[in-house]
Image (cartoon, rainbow, N blue to C red; front, side, top):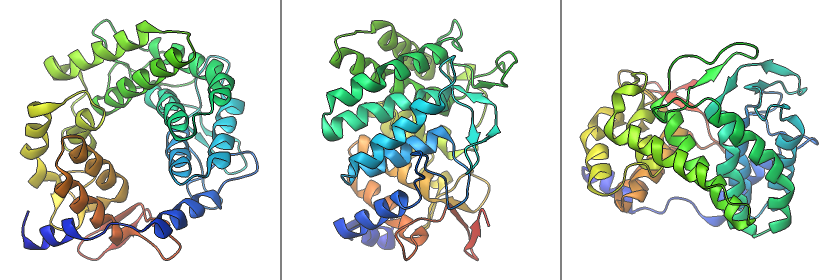
Length: 310
């Protein structure tokens, strides 16, 4: 890091009051049904919906988070999956079924448990979780990878994504932890996660090439699939490719599109390897995206700081 980056790394990221303001900006978007749209009158996808539920739990808004998971419970398909996008009136915008989107509830529910230790909530949501993971594992190939998606009434697409499978392996472990907590063990979920790890570490060529996307760079570390020296080497090797000065993390390597979500996730990946200075530096750069009500812009295009999506 240069001197300017070191200065960013040593400054305080956010106060408790600022974090609570952000959580309240999310809670204010939540509909009576529990759905949390991207923005007012915007659409909602189950993956980002779980992300926002976790943010609510972190700041103690457990009732709002519980309602968010109830919405997932009420919108789950009979086969265990969720449609990809819902409109603000809760009609379905995109019927595509995405394996990572459907698995992420495992991560969210384990986080919900860690935040409030509400075993009744775990029991309530267990059937939903079990159906979701069963559906996801139906998309698995013999090499352990999970196919990305399929249209509603069609066969799965014929390739797997490194980012998606990294996230799924973490969700499988979280779901298996829940199963253990409820004394309904699912060792096959741990085994499925381990097989994904093997593919990521030893046969990365089995994934669809997406090298220009930042998520493929840091997600194997963020998810815990890569650890130790291998993880550190991976993050160091492409730092200059994806981190744009003191602005944050590029969405893709060849464009000046800086996104708050990729930057925050990458910060967590560096935290996972013990590099807290770089983690704090990256998280501090997300201040460029923060608005006066505590919400965050999705992305900025440099050098003109054009907001995207517009």
